Length: 184
Image (cartoon, rainbow, N blue to C red; front, top):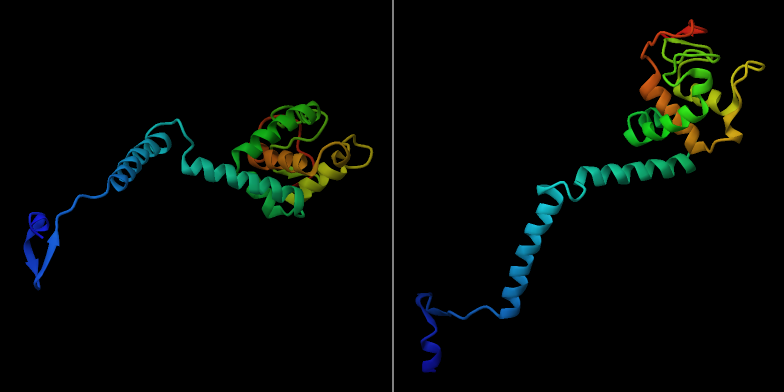
């Protein structure tokens, strides 16, 4: 009993004495390693630019969700306008536009053979769904715009429309004369 008395703390509460024992080594090592891990984790993800931030991780997950949605859900105007706000969709759409559409609309969209996409005049209407329909099914018969639904996947067509909506529309670049009715 005397060996335990040396380890008792001097204070008592309601007649209860408390031992002053050491914590188990396995518990201490677990605690120390958790502290080291937390410092390394914080430095990797928040303190430096080595790891992706939580915002970047969310953006990647969100864009992956939208890509899946683009393949499986019917196209709506709200969906296309949401895509027009995403940098990766605009970047992909720009590449597709420059490869397939720039020969008729110029790389900046100001129109060459095809109409000027930067002004407020639209032949078929300015809505996102209308633009998607024109890209998918082609323009006016005999005017040269092909139906891209046989050549481009639905996701690529959506990316092109997102690029037109987000980066070209309403930039008012000088180019081909306005065609169609003005947007209200």
